[in-house]
Length: 101
Image (cartoon, helix red, strand yellow):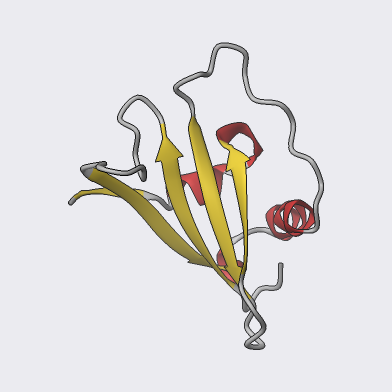
């Protein structure tokens, strides 16, 4: 991930089933790459490159998942990954805001 790239974030699942069919809560956020540290950008680049995230926590049946969509600054095609909460950097998780729909 480059400093000029944009990252769209969706939080899915959990007890309320956010982001699913019929959900009444939508949790989304957006960041520009320069808002992240170099280590965070490198971690995300590895995940978008196919690196397998660490397994989720045992007993996390109602845990959140995150769908991240990377929009390259150069106008390339966006790409998406869906990850367990444990694989997502804290700053990315903290950028998400809930809204009733």
